[in-house]
Image 1 (tube, rainbow, N blue to C red):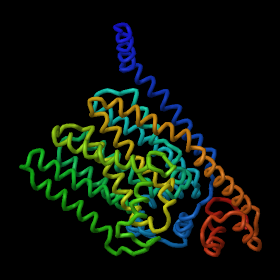
Image 2 (cartoon, helix red, strand yellow):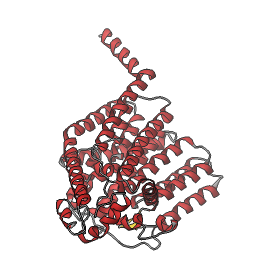
Image 3 (cartoon, rainbow, N blue to C red):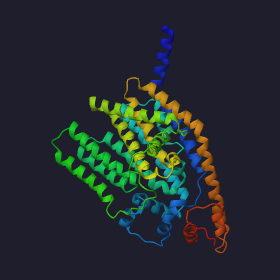
Image 4 (cartoon, one colour):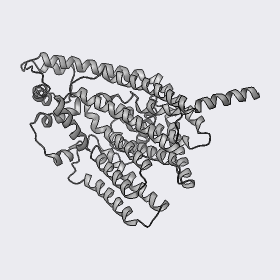
Length: 439
């Protein structure tokens, strides 16, 4: 028995060796990044898809907006100004090449994974074998819509600002500079998408927390920071057009609860939609309470702070899509574009588990569950992405070989936008911008 215990201790010591851990994380991350980039690169097509056609007049120059008009630009219920400015800049240096936009998205996700591992190191002063969970989740291909549509830059930017926000929280100590940086990120997040408004709300929550747990003498800084973040939220709705894609659901019903539960399980890559989905939601809520309890007991527990923020953001995002999309269908809860933010739930659990005495047991269970779901359900996303890329290539080839007289035939191959007339009126200008000269 003693020999077995000694061997286990040797294995544990080996796995805790920082040199071994860093080599493992580097090799594991390289493999994950390679698979992630390969998936995207082989399915990227240089043609706008669906909502991105709404930007065709802006990119082609038919509609001219100044900087502030672009910054305040509203698409459906979202103000997408920050992302639109990025798209417009990328278009100006690439002839509106969607492949460049997609590469930019890929780069953002890789940077996000690196920053999150950095946050883990800052908090714990060391890395662990289990930290490979971060790139496994962040660089998942279940979020295929956000990876293969250049327009989704506008949708995913709030995630980049959130993770940057958490990084600032953990490295900047001086209140004035910390709140200035966090408020700036909150502003950029808010004018990226509607769910970006969650960040100024979290900023206000953090300031209130700091006020009651740290020095209260600097009340002016707290007050100004809260007011500015509140004004950011208010400013979002000045001149706001109620351009909603679906009716808002304001009453709790069986359908809204089911939609919420399915959206939670979507973040764990579990797409079956059975009792396990409900168990996952219960687990998330339980450990959110555990994280809050630990933070009350130990105000310096930064693993709990990060975990609570990630869980809160994920749950608030799911609440938003439940209010705005659950009236359409329950299937929408499994939309791949929503995974980018619902995946914050397993990441939040991972950070909270890191602060628990036997957290490694929970982390092993979490890792096995998520990895298993990747193995079982990933083919569904890969097949979807393959079909989309094949259809996009076919219709792009058709447009290149068409004339104005027979352009309508391409729409029948595969519709790139819901309105055929709108698309046909703009396809020639878009291909001209791209440097392709058919029609």
